[in-house]
Length: 99
Image (cartoon, rainbow, N blue to C red):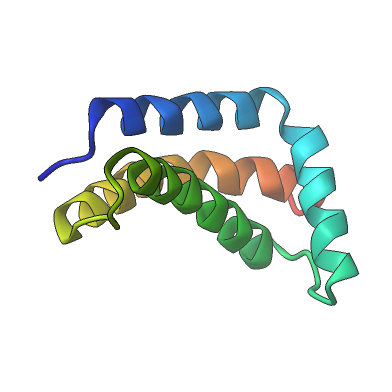
């Protein structure tokens, strides 16, 4: 079973919005991580972002179908996210002044 089209569209919309408002969202993420005692490094920000995006899709599937993601859906999500990680990594490096 592959990801439902609606779930993929929600993910793409969330990523597009995230990238449009990147600095604002990165600042918010960074501040949140600091408040819970986690240093906002490149890896922690990438992990936090990936977790949120995974939750968006998983929550959508849970609310729509009342189930968790299948292995196939999870694998498809991972591939989609892997394709976006380089762009997020580049933007987070610039945000953290690592470039």
